Amino acid sequence: MKIDILTIFPNMFDNIFNESIIKRAVENDIVSINIVNFRDYSDDPHKKVDDTPYGGGAGMVLAPGPIFNCVEELKTKDSKVILLTPDGIPYKQKNAYDLSKEKHLIIICGHYEGFDERIRSLADIEISIGDYVLTGGEIPAMVLVDSIVRLLPGVINEQSHLEDSFNHNYLLDYPTYTKPRVFRGMEVPEVLTSGDHAKINKWRQEESIKKTKKRRPDLFK
Image (cartoon, rainbow, N blue to C red; front, side, top):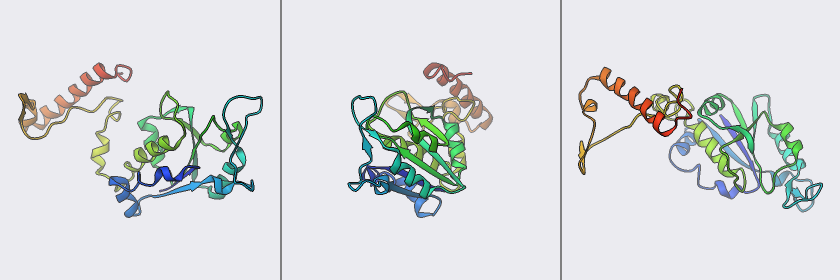
């Protein structure tokens, strides 16, 4: 997979993809992640990428020119263009799975008071990571890349992400434990040390249901 992230703050990504699982995925040529400064695509002599809004109002608005120029140069028949915006669809695990099957993602990070409405015409999908406002799309882009790359074949053990929260009919993941068996008076449930895998699986399913009902009743079906 190839991922291009369009931003005017490329330094924000200096370290985030150079650690842990994503770093190994890049080193193993499973994914290529490119940070593209769309300021370089501005036709303005001073490389300006924003301007004041028509009709007045506070702040500056990202102009369409640089982003159109950038996307048009990078886009191929295999590209899927993602626009990160607070009014996009709420991002879910299913979206991560769907996007992990794409060959090329182009992720546009907005900034300032917003972007020229015509930029939406470039997007195949608009995504929001939550009902709150950030200073820009850079952090959401990091969230998307992390959630997508870990699902690519060969990045982590498939069983690990198949058992993640939100994968079993939207249930949260079951509780997990490790050694020691007793820690400060808190004991590992006896069923997990029984060796009876049928009972363990049944317990895990029941605990997932209880946990989801208690913590995320909105997810429970």
